[in-house]
Image (cartoon, rainbow, N blue to C red; front, side):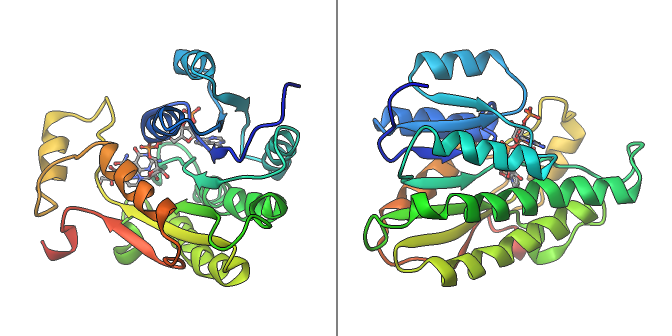
Length: 240
Ligand SMILES: NC(=O)C1=CN([C@@H]2O[C@H](COP(=O)(O)OP(=O)(O)OC[C@H]3O[C@@H](n4cnc5c(N)ncnc54)[C@H](OP(=O)(O)O)[C@@H]3O)[C@@H](O)[C@H]2O)C=CC1
Ligand SMILES: Nc1nc2c(c(=O)[nH]1)N=C([C@H](O)[C@@H](O)CO)CN2
């Protein structure tokens, strides 16, 4: 099973894009890192070669969520930060019934963070004032809703509310904050017309990439005071 890790940063959904960038960032800062992955991309091999502990987990069931928590507890007695990045941007339609879309969105964006926060509470507490962090990755649409991703937006809104509840429950040992991005990264299948439309929705008109999230995370993890808040990373989209 290997040696116990020293206060690792735990990242859910670390196999690609933002989660993967976060894992490499914190490894480069010489943190121990645990990531959950669902699909074993080649990037997982590279993460393991770079020293991360990569644990396969599917959060589509509560049992899968709690199995991941048990696997984390088998590797460490304390956690520096728990980053709830895992997510699916599921729209209505696409052959799925509304009931299935709603279930999947609530499972990944609400059941997983809620159950993992409770299951790993004992590993987050007991390290001193503001010594540990939980980060919920929500979305700009929490403020506005979304006509094409209704269940997704509702589930992220629930996650936004969990931020304040867990901040009240876990202070002052553990800070709990949310990051609410809008367009950060395109998906590889996004066509040029979609890309231009999406860029035009903000004042800044760029897709800034993972560094915007990484820099905010570095700030939040060094704070001894900020908790219970959501931080928009949206290029001024609300002013368009
Ligand atoms: N990218 C952007 O522009 C924006 C991102 N965000 C938020 O930022 C975070 C990161 O975004 P991004 O990197 O684009 O996310 P992605 O959708 O690219 O990746 C999310 C990760 O979560 C994993 N995941 C999805 N469903 C499950 C599940 N049931 N069980 C376990 N793992 C699962 C995926 O695994 P697998 O690869 O195997 O499917 C994937 O590795 C997300 O919370 C997202 O909602 C918010 C607004 C904009
Ligand atoms: N899990 C994901 N959530 C979101 C993604 C994504 O790729 N994966 N992408 C977006 C869009 O960039 C959107 O913000 C564009 O307006 C939203 N959420």
